[in-house]
Amino acid sequence: MTPAAASEKATALSMLREHWGWFVLVALLLVFLYLLGPILAPFAIAAVFAYIGDPIVDRMERHRISRTAAVCVLFVIATLITVLALVLIVPLLQTQVLSLIDNIPAWAQWVQQVAMPKLGLKMPRGYQLDVDSLRKFLASHWDGASDFASIIAGYVGRSTPALLGFLANLFLIPIVSFYLLRDWDVMVVKIRNLIPRRVLPQGIAFATETNDVLSALIRGQLLVMLALAVIYSLGLWLVGLKVALLIGIVSGLVSFVPYLGFVGGLLAASIAMLVQEQSAGGVAWVALVFTVGQMLEGGVLTPMLVGDRIGLHPVAVIFAIMAGGQLFGFVGVLVALPVAAVLAVLVRHALRRWARSALYLDVDTAPAPPAVESDTRP
Image (cartoon, rainbow, N blue to C red):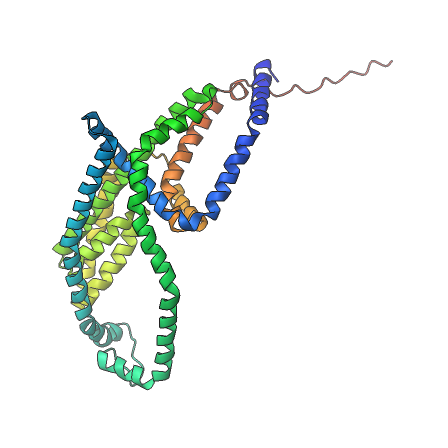
């Protein structure tokens, strides 16, 4: 082994012995976060909101507005936008859902009289897909229906604490967001002061690159979700789907999971079109809308709004989301991509350091084989 490689190895071992306590602390912190996974959702969502709003508050501060006043102004604006959106969208969604429900009897009749005969299927003797038949079925199986109703009632009763917890977390998000956003710069300075001076330049470079990746990912992905919600809603409205707004918004909002918005929205819109039109012709137009949306997302929206900053393969993105959901539930799904982006930056830094190491550059670092003594006996 060359002297340079031996020196680097000795330095690495020395740093490992010196900072072993920090590694133990990080491991304990990860275990702690895993155990607290069920209650982390409001704090993770609040941290994302604070991270997104920090540049806006910083711009207000540059105009001689105090940090607290700037946060209050931002919260007032966000609240007004949310209330306005709810006032405009909720009545439309209610109308579309009621329209979909009204079309269910006609759809059931189309399935029984048209779709099933074409597929060579028949309803069992004495049964039909209509409201009257459903009522007669429930009346003839009242005991089972009563048991089913009891099961539903019991489930609702058991779910009440979970619902109350969800409402409490929902109320907690803006409170935590306010305090995080108000003290964001102070927390950043305190974290920076904890970094050892010897690795401060590398830490600053890592933090800068991580911030660039996260800002491009989070803000860009939110814009992509909003754009897809508009594209899907407008496209489904143009092809005549009455629940276009409902399906378009939901499909756009869940598009942060690769292909979930596309596949889920396509299935939901196809079923809704069959319920509405009782024919398969509209499904082709629905498929065209989602195909165009998917092409725009991959070819225009994501490259323009997000770019290739995250540096992760689509398979790695899907794996990160599934792993996050498996380990931390809903919170894991929310933070999977940001955490994966940070880990990608860490891996890139490690690979660059490895490429500059003496162990990688020196081809003669492997120990030479021992010399074989020749046999000099007569």
